[in-house]
Image (tube, rainbow, N blue to C red; front, top):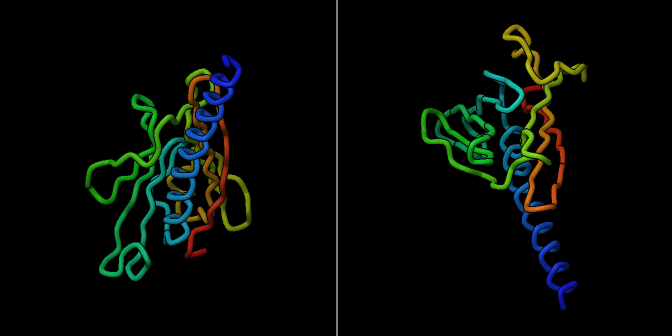
Amino acid sequence: MIWGAKSAGATNDFMQTQAQIRSALDNIADETRWGQSVTAAGPTSVTLLIPQSTPFSSLSSYSVTFAYDALNKTVTRQQNSGAAVPLAYLVAGRGGSTGLTFTYFDSGNISLGSSPTLAQLPTIARLRVTVATTSRAVTRNLAGDSALRAH
């Protein structure tokens, strides 16, 4: 009976980590695809300009920031100057390492790394999002790429 309880616990941890990764990746990738440009970029956060007339906003353009909150181990989404809202929980790599990392690429598929310069921001055409989630002993890492609409 002890093995069954351990197995059920491990399965539950796996399902929780998988669900949180999907929540973060899917939301970031979906909205990034409609992005017109990257206005701020760092290793654990990105700010995008989303133009008017998209599935996300038919009335006006807006900026959206996706960021890693290391204190609360969450991925957040902030629209314009509104409050940051958690998209995913349990976001942390093994041993408490960073749970969200962005890597940026230009239209020639050349990596700009995780900390592009201000001069490189207008050249960003694609970003790679890597998310790690941990629940007890189970850690999952997944990555997804998303091209900006304008490129």
